Length: 179
Image (cartoon, rainbow, N blue to C red):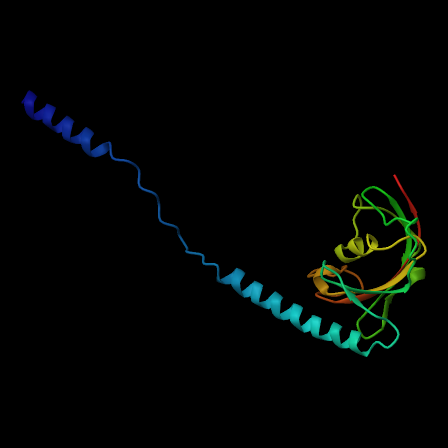
């Protein structure tokens, strides 16, 4: 009787000591959502880019330059002097700007947006304008054309600028106070 009891305990311990099995997931998620999102965003960008390039082609007075940051710009007032510097991290940039749609309709006027002091890369500002200011010197005026992902993106500004809206902004840098 003792031997049967001992054999049962040994068999029980052997069976109960197996490693835990991982549980199967309740639902399987694939990368299809992300793949669809990427395809949708690429198509949106190509559509916006085509409209922007059409505007640039029809622009007689401005010579636009494609930036490496994904937007286009043209200077109306360019200062060639090497004595003036572009802003660096922490510099205070005093500027005016307006925002309009690609068809030229003013969304925010220069008066609505007012003159602004911006601490370079230390405050909130939409991506395109932040990168655009880095290209300018005090006294310069430039027009920027931003695709939606460089402007206000998917959410817009939750006021006048809607979802995925490319914009044009005319910017004048009044002064740069270096830190």
